[in-house]
Length: 231
Length: 234
Image 1 (cartoon, helix red, strand yellow):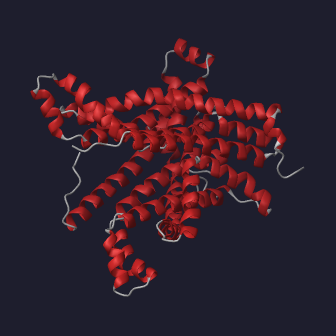
Image 2 (cartoon, helix red, strand yellow):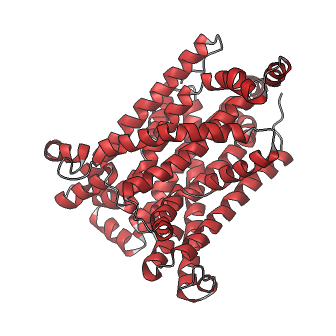
Image 3 (cartoon, chains in turn yellow, purple):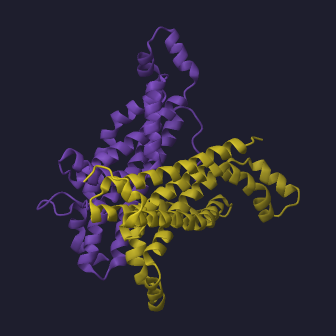
């Protein structure tokens, strides 16, 4: 047995497993991102609102989710949450792809609260005078938030949000624990089937590195193209 | 839920100890604490190297930091668990594997904390220390690091929170830390998945939320002592 046989990464069954894993990891990232961003924005707005009740709800949700490891979230959503569902919904879940669905729920919540904190610091970085000026020009509260506050806050939060996306991408690996067949799961599967740990883990390492570094590069380009203007 | 706690609390706290290796919540806490403490010297060294004026020192460390931050912790755990024994010929246990991986990760994240602390100091600190006749390392040790590390305590506590959350990944290689024990309890009881995992989540929450509040209070206290504006309260 050669130490490193690149052949198995180029074609054949193991190649197919690893590529399927890579595709599922990317899909999990994309689906969770699409759900996490609005969830995070909503929480950030709640925490920044003048209403005490909304602030308290937002803070509770963020702290409750953030202080529990992703692995425990995944275990809960996969093993416990279906027990709470009514029978027909539960069966429908088990008939589809429960691993991927539960992974997306857990990842979206976990990434969402971290994004909420980034968006909130973005909102706080916008001078209060912006909102006051928008209001005095006759914009309603929601119009002022939507047209004046949020565009500026988002511009400040894009680089940290992209770095959260890198975290989300890396965190998809933890979904292995509930048997979602993403890249880490498939790499371990190749290892078990063939003892080709070096090849399988090299593939996974390069894939994780490439995607992470591409997202970081995008963050840097964004910062150069749209530098934050200070008032 | 009460009877569940009543029946399994000891198992949850220490695993099979004293009839087997230590596990459960105590293992989670011990492992995270040990990883952070062991990572400190390495983290300090890497942090100083990260802001070093010599490229030959700065670039390899920067590359290491970038790579470690770009891959999932779980991947490094797998490398250490499956690949390392093949090279060294010695089968490392789950606890040792997890500890080594956590030390590496913590060192890299601590390095960033130290480097950020040094970069935040005014440039004149190094220049004036050097012009007073101190060598580079003496200036670092006597002038820059004491200032940079003064406010590092809250970050350390936050890093401990991250480490506690990261130990949960030991579950995947069969380390009997608290998530693994919870799953075993769930298998034994079989019908109370919701209760078991709620208890697990609450345990982590109490631990991590408590520590992050501590970090917040420390930060405020340090801020006040230094006469700076304290961070805006929530």
